[in-house]
Image (tube, rainbow, N blue to C red; front, side, top):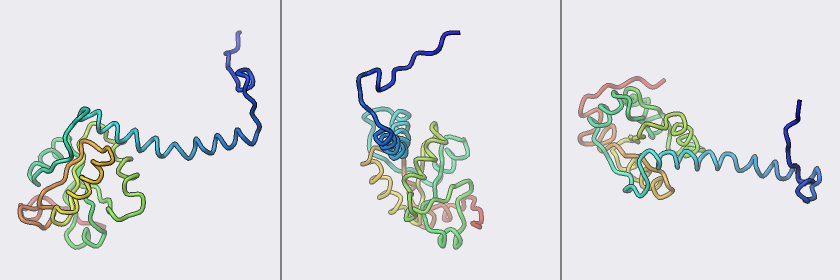
Length: 167
């Protein structure tokens, strides 16, 4: 049975040492999280299309309807204390915007749900808009803010939409 042909650095005329190979491996390992983040952002861009507008906003009713229809991933970016005070929008994923590695964790959600738009909800809508704009400037697409948030005028609680207790 023939063996697969492989070209080693030696065959290509390159000199390698165990030290340089391990350094290359460490560099590659360090780049993998960045590549995963880039792929997640590019996936969002591909889902929405190149040259798409900056992140926008939707109403709480639109967010609830799209989430119920399986087209939207609702991410609550408030703090754990706020989640405890008011509960979470039903079906929302709690992800504190001030937590370490927020963007990496959000990229993980994008990788897990590539076909869904991501909507950010906060207390009144202001932080969600700012966060969506900031991430949009970094290449994120298919990302929107929920106007009114949980407690603002026209917000989730004002519209009496379903809430679950945060534990």
